[in-house]
Image 1 (cartoon, helix red, strand yellow):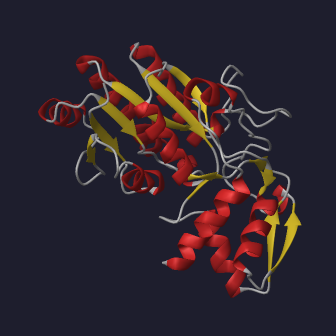
Image 2: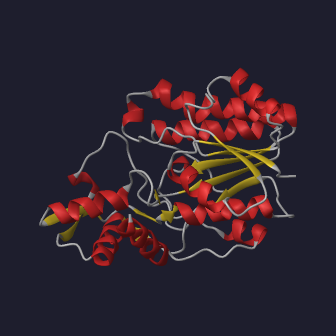
Length: 286
């Protein structure tokens, strides 16, 4: 059924990785970003989808500036909630399948065991709350969908934590990085390959799924691994969250349980350290 696919947010980290991951597939894919398709306008979406006979939508578009969102509630809500509602409405009209990327920030971060898809959500900041509203808008439409919650996304494309640490570790003699926030880094290329597996699957099933790389890390662990792989000069030291106060509260623990997506789609997930090494090799080669 997945023959003509619309990808939104195609110039972001995940969208860029999807361009590579879908290169060898037989699908007809329409990669769009804000300049090509305004997903905050339902008439624009409807026109594009009907004109191009779209049967599958992969929504990678999002407002992801977590701290800025606290001051830009309307903008965050427009992209993370209302635009998603538009996509779900048009998907319902044409009976299209919708894959939507969500976030670990829909949880409060107070767990001490990995979050499953059935755990209660309780977003604490504007970013997480607007992403959660987007999820609910999809579910309420009663369409065929996969919502994929992910965490700590990075890539050789775009701006992200890996590139920031690489830059700072070469510019400075020492860095402090938070050690009391725990989660799992996710290489966007691995997530893109998982989305392709879903598109190729004969056993897809509507629902919410969790995806990140395997393993667990603090931001400090992550930064230390980046520095070691890049043989950077800076000494990296751990610090507590309160030493670097931010406008938006981050989850202290947001490790995701991936059992459901592994069982449903038969995928194997790489450990975050192995994927990080691949990504840094690509960054070095650019």
